[in-house]
Length: 229
Image: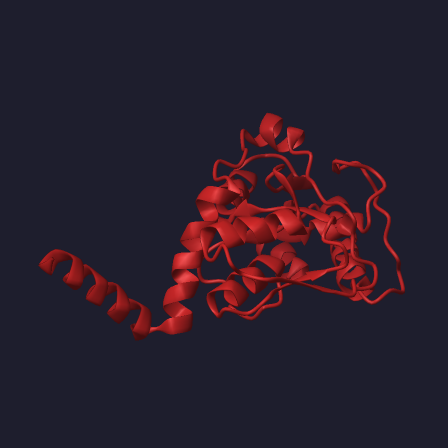
């Protein structure tokens, strides 16, 4: 793709990731932080793959004058995500809707920051329309432990949803929170949608796709019953 961008004179966007910071020793993470990554761990193919992609992108920018933009995307959620993609928000929402236990790995004290998809899209557009290469952290600085996220899902879907603890995965980062000062100052961007506002929109979409016509029929029946009373 970089070769194609070079040949046709296109502006190239790399959607990198907060995983380039690994299990960070700096909190929150700024773009100048080089990260703390295990190069041979179970997560390395993703972490190091994205770090290498950033390296290649900057090499083409410096060596071949390709116009590039780099975004480091933090956890993002919203409607139309794959229901069983294994991401934590998708997992919790699908599990709560299906009346399954919410699976929390480790003690649930590890943190993540969750941005709604429309905020990310706006950030990417501002990055591509602007004059700054990056990298830029694009994420919501609101920080939640996994247990806090599970509790928000319970509040939104089912207060009686059970939480089930499982052994933690290897090299799971303990903390993740973006410093978005650079994006605010140079792109004029910051997220607008808090988790408690964005999550119900995702839940509504997941409910329709998991239950299909049953959810619509049940909703229609309830409305009909209420109007006839």
